[in-house]
Each structure stands twice: as structure tokens, then as C-alpha cells.
Length: 378
Image 1 (tube, rainbow, N blue to C red):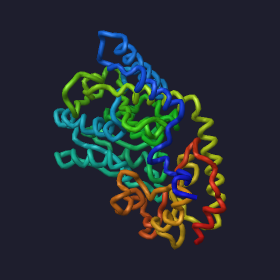
Image 2: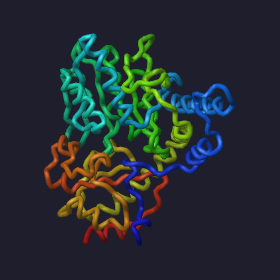
Image 3: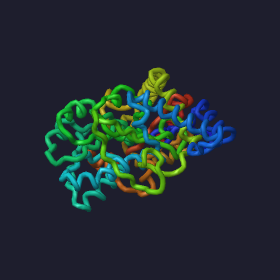
Image 4: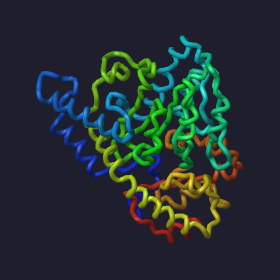
């Protein structure tokens, strides 16, 4: 079996493109290719209608308003806009304290570190040994000067789901803005992200069977109060002045379609992922793997595991012609540094070096489980 025929088990890094989403994208690339900002002809009008439809589709998924949907290039840009975009307001109002966790994606940790170098105080909350952060630990750190609480919905390396609903409830009477990086859960875990106390939500198209290069920052209005974001880029009035530049209509239309399909089919997709998970865990049981993340608190499509006596490199080498897997975040996997997520969980060095992430989706074909186990046994 060649590597081209291997089963793709790295869906937390990026997902395959849903055929219906690809069809929408091709339509707006090849047939309806107008600029959404062109108002003097029908091509531009139809492009604008496509963007407005996508806004409604995303808003409906999250229980938000269409005007609260800001399209970006992806969750990394959305995270930067949500965090750095609050910096000037925080300084002006004496709100210079930020709370986040040690297991956030670098697209959250690095913008926050940038603010820290500029005088902001930052509290980093560690998870428990199963990778979950206690909401109470975050609540105890709140101050009158707290500007922002930023907590991911589910971790990209372990799949562990964080208690954002509990956190949102606890923040009901505190003015701090709440930001959730939902790159791994948007269109998959529906109800938690509908909580009205979540002010800012980041997501990417390529994590929900849509295209790369498009994402969203949902900026909820709290009563009559708007989140006081400032743009990071200047040169146009698009996206309410927060994200200037010509809108990529084909990508946005495809993202909207992916969001709608996520809402319609999330229960069916979740069942398929859970069934695959059961078969996976049953197959590897004889290998006595250490699973990182408590069962029942992990996304259905993710397993992070260390196999006794094997480094991650050796595991991936043995499996390379059978399955495509990774040893952590795709954004940092080339650096060969110990995972900051697993380190924060307090795992031993051997477990961290051996950790491999398996992640799948409803489009994943069946795997030759016997062959996989035999390769891991060596």
C-alpha cells in the first residue's frame, strides 16, 4: 500500500472537503465571480447576496445575529483580532489583566504574550492531569481590571473539551470579555457555543470540511454594548471596518455551506465518529497504550496516545504506509519541541515524546485494524 492510499487520521489539523461544499466554492470561482463590493452590476449584487447568505448560515449555527459575523482568513487571524484588537481599549480603561490557559493554541498564547510585553498582566491556568481546566480556577483569578478571559472550547492536541458553559455562566455578572477559540468544535459541538455570554468566537473553514483560507470571528453584542475592537489592518471599510480587503466570495460561500451542513448533520456525524472511536480503542487495547484525556471529556473524533517503548517518531514511521497521523499541532510539529499542552498536563517526558494524535471524521474510510496493531507491535 502506498502512502497515497493510506487512511488520513489527521483531521484535527485539517479536514477533507465536503463534496457539497466544494460544489458551492467552484460555482463562485467559475460562474459567479463578481466582487461583493461592486454595486453597479448583477455580478456584484449576486456576490453580495452569497456573502449575506453565508453570514446567516454561520449566525444560525451559533444562535447569533448575521451582523455579528466577521469573516477572516481563519481562526489564527480571528484570535489575533479578538485579543490584540482589545489592547487599546484595555489601556484606556485600566483593564490590563488577561486570563487564559497553558493549553491554548499558539494563535492565542502568542498575541497574549505580545500584550504582556506591552504591560498587560497575564494569568496562565494549568489543566489537571487529564487536560481539563477547572472553571473555578479561572473564576478565582478575576479582578476588577480583568479585560479578557480566553479559553479554547476543545484542545487541538488531546481533544479534551473545556467547561466553557460553566465559565460563561460564572461570568454573568463580571464585565470581562469572554473569547472562545472554537476551531476544533465549530459545527461539531453546537449548543455550548450558543451561550449568549460568550462575546467572541473564532473558527476556521478547513476544520469543518470547508476550504482553507477563510474563517470567522463572531463578535456578539452584549445588550447595547459592542465589543470595543480595533482593526489590525487598515485600508477599507469591509467587515464593519474590522477586516478590510476584498472578500473571498467563493471561500465565504463555501464556509457558509459547511456551517449549515454542520448544523444539519452534526448528530449523524458524531455517531459515525463515536463508532470509529469504539473500534479504534478496541483494536489498540492489547497494546496497553496510555490515553491522554479522560473518556467522556474528549471530542468523539480524537485520541492522543502513547505506546509503551515507542517514540512518536517511531510510531509514525511504522504506520506511515497505513495511516497518516501527527504528533501534535500542525502549526508547530516541525519544531520538534515537547508539546506545551502535554507538558502543562504534567505528563512524564517519555509519555510526551511518545504521544501521537489520531483524529478522524465522518468521511474517514474503514481502517485495517489488524494491520495497524501488527505494525505497532513491530
